[in-house]
Image (cartoon, rainbow over all chains, first blue to last red):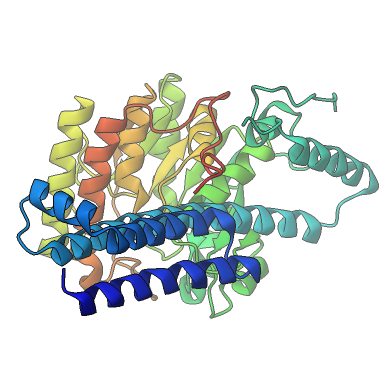
Length: 137
Length: 275
């Protein structure tokens, strides 16, 4: 692999790695979302430094010019990351929907002017609702 | 109210189901009227519901309207749920199911806020439900009666008929109007859809869900009016998205077989803590 492109690849993936770590350190990025980023940065960095591995890999896949293999792998990571975010967004959408529905129902109940008795029952129900099952790990 | 210990296998939403509902109403029937910017028609809809089905409580679900739909509905004497932002028809209607479940209603009627449905036509739906207690959903269909007074554009009618064809195959019974939002549900239907209801354009998918949960439905002929004021939730530009989305939902629904988690399954929303 040409030296210039190797330097560029090492610098770029190294920088990505450091930026992600720094974002986690400043609590701007949650660990659960950082892991995939760190993994991709780490793999890209390893491939950029360890030229033998990259050219072997390129030969196995059938790519003549090894840096293209690097780009292909980087592209693969980008796809995985995007899918990951689509999953996260779907989950947030679902959670937001449930929250909005709960909020609307609670507001309606409040507007109706709850009597002391039903307010008591509401509180009990709220406790039940929050308690839920222990989260299985 | 008996204390209910949250057991390991129950998940929170269902605790509300098994706890005694808070009943502070006399009716066992609830009409849910999803309305998004329907201030022009919703008042009339509520009044006609009060006239024709006085034994139904009327709940207008204002899905984040900006035109005072909620105030109009309240003034007309309806209960209202006000969504903090626009959830889309699926989320709005599901809020109605959750409300009905928690307040112990036995029957829910879904009725559009745009004046398209006619309150007089509720009677045949109720009659069908009363005739056959094994029915979980009774659907008003535009296409069963001899004279369709429904001037839908040809593109939309084509879509409806395509869905109707697919659903009839999947459910092995005739489904003529799968996009109709004029529906009566019993408690089983309410419980199912309170647990899981599709996000947008939900009616077609709901039929698939119902089928794979082994709940039963039937259609009865109704007439529908052209829309009053307001705009349909399905604009012309969205028709294609609508078609594709619903087709995807149908095929995924078939592959899914068990579309919603049963009690004791992992909670759908919080399912994957590592996402």
